[in-house]
Length: 216
Image: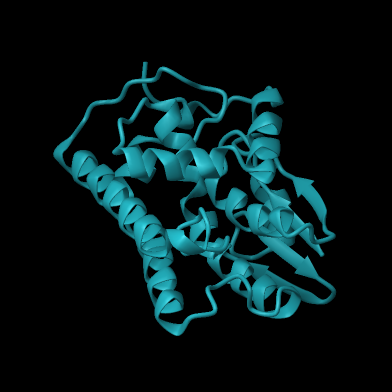
């Protein structure tokens, strides 16, 4: 397999499938295409007509979109261990993953992922405040509900953790205060070996994407 990604410092969508594959120590090659540079769009279009990263190449197959890649990897290489084994937990994990994938637009738009940055401050709009409270509620609820089986949202590490991983980094960058349970979950993600490797690599990058340098 080859996973084509953007900057590790900025590309939250690239992080998600990378984290799933790295956590499970799957063998894959990595191709990084720095974003917002001359030639970036052409390089990505050669990989996928969708024109966005991440892109997974596996033989003759091309899969794009973070969640679709995670689903494929789970089915083909992880014996479906990307999702919880229990049907109810699996349904809930898919629901929160889909919510992160298609919603929470204020967090994604006003708090872009930036692994290098800390101490940033952005205006706290009502929409942003509401979404932060929603994320805190989700993390707290599911970690308490399934925490007896492990430290992740649904006990064992799952795609749901991958979907929320960029948010754990965002909340560090912008100094977001969390409840004790949500903060413990945030630290669980940030302290994981694969996440630390990604963040460290992101901090070592030198490219700057001005649109993602939010806050002061």
